[in-house]
Image 1: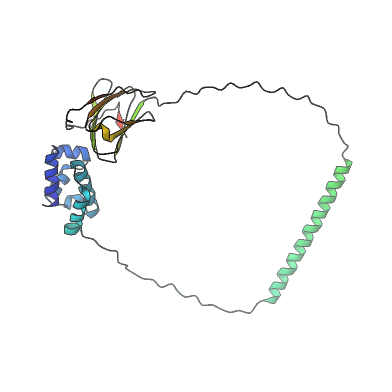
Image 2 (image 1 turned 60 degrees about the horizontal axis):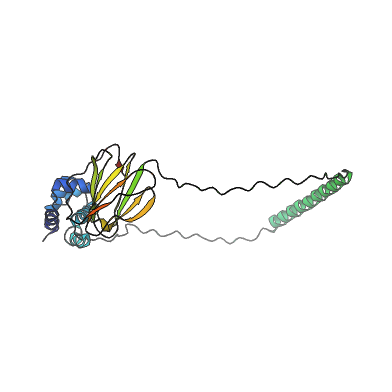
Length: 272
């Protein structure tokens, strides 16, 4: 089975159309269709072709490394850099010259004169300081009453600071996980599939409602606070967050996870 056939069958098994896969991976449909036909010309080169294969494989649940190896073996190949030119460093000729004793003696005389001048100037400065100090009359030091100690400062309890908006970061730690996000009006504003190791940050000025599939594999950080796993492995968890100290309202369902259908975003909430 070729690279394109493997990716096409994996996409069908995942229940994704070419259009939906293009929205999730941000890869143009014409490139996805070309790759599934084993036509890698639209990719724009071997480097981009390998990147597209890796992204499509992860989005459809395949291991990317065997497909990359197959691409290198059948299409891309491997090459080693070859030097184009070799430059020999020029050899510098060494000229042996006799020491210039006249110049050395002149430099030594100048150094001695500079040293003598510095010593003379320093001695005069010390004499001037001593004479000035002897002319200054001694002054009496006034006794100053010690200042009263400052009043004790009571320790203040500092309230932890949270962002003015709700900020949620979802990280797929132990496997793939899909997420849907809704605003305060229960309008869907975002949807995606996170591969293992990927993370997504969402913000909203008022409220975020989240649905997280395979929630046991995802980890939540809300308003700068780590809340741990989003739910149970294989289950769909629902959370609601607002600005301030995160107090999630979670419902976990053990039913089968629905496949995401579309990805939307609005000005009120934005993924980072």
